[in-house]
Amino acid sequence: MSVTPPHVAIVGGGIAGLATAFSLQERAAEAGIPLACTLIESDRAWGGKIVTHRVGDALIEAGPDSFLSQKPWALQLCAKLGLSDRLMNTNESHKKTYVFSRGRLRELPEGLVVVAPAKLGSLLRSGLLSWPGVARMGMDLVLPARRADGDESLASFFRRRVGREVFERVIEPLMAGIYAGDAEQISLKATFPRFLEMEREHGSLIRGMLAGRKTAPPSGLNAAPARTMFVTLRDGLGEMVRALVARLSEARVTMRPEHRVMALRVRSTRPGTWTYDLLMEGGQVVSADAVVLATPAYVTADLVRSLSPTAAGTLETIPYASTATISLMYGADEVGSSLRGFGFVVPRVEGRALLAATWTSSKWAHRAPPSHALIRAYVGGVGHEAILKTDDETMVRHVREELRSMAGITAMPIYVQVHRWERGMP
Figure 1 (cartoon, one colour):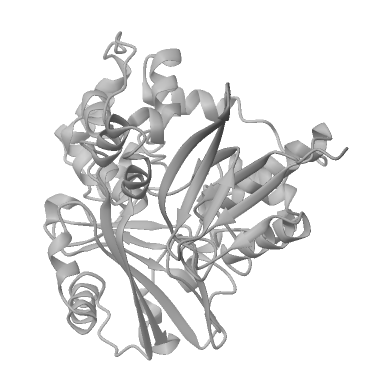
Figure 2: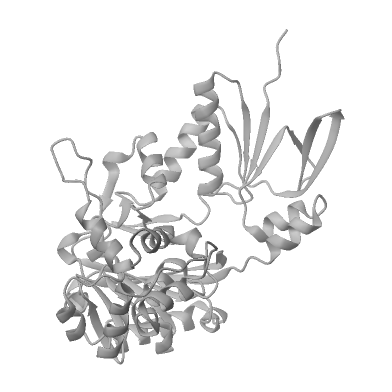
């Protein structure tokens, strides 16, 4: 007598849903347990915010363009997918980052690894911080560690450890370039728990950073390839999505793109067992023994409202930031002298529309032919929503004016692509 295998339905075909389906299939295979799995996505394409385009010989990322190597999970997933040899570091020959501060671009000193300056002289010469600001940062060495065990915001933590000026002029723009949110609301534990660990273990961020350098494992013949802070794939992050989709198809996961779940219902077929019915937009019903909701919090809230109004209410309180990325292609000879380093970030206190700009073709190899230069600009985020209310033409005009006034780029772009992400970042 054959036994029907348990069925898991996963709602959401972004990287979270794809990785969940992959992990479930992997663990079921290791345990020798048969498992049926259905992955449901409302969009035509898989990958969610990961959107990689080819435009001629150029590669454009509409969403994220890399991931942090210090958080190992993406690297581990790439290894399981056979993509380790496709991983690509940033171009270290251009390893400089700039901050637009007090009217001009100022180099972020190489010795400043978030908060630990190896060379105070270069930090002072950069003009990023005043003498009092540097002195306040140094107080991190003597300030006692926080005794409370609870979470706190990024803003609260860094102001407490290194002072307001370092936070506003250095930390906040770097964090905004990653999360586009309000540092007053972003959880330290959820985003950068290692800084909290440094404070607890060493009593100081600076001492923690220096200790981390001393204990870094030496490179050797059998060492894993050294990774830069940000890592990507040779053909963009879309490679990861394509590899996941291929592996799930091989594992006979039922893939349902362009299918929208409208509601979730629970029924009991016999005491102690439950069946979940997913009511689809076209009237179909998908029944499962378990459901994973890999959807944004506001979508999840709607799906669980009839089951738990309290949970739905809590999910709805999670704020989301809206952003837009604007990719601009130029002739390399028209902008070459302006593209120093990897690009620049803009502190909130400057009051500019631009959050950051990345010199994509300088930061990454294989992103544009030698005759062209690719730039990616970021706008929006918490406190910068006004520009998102404009049309694409107006938005591009604002971005070009910001690039002119901050980086001296006056050339007309050969190609422009705008991608808007409404409520894209929690």
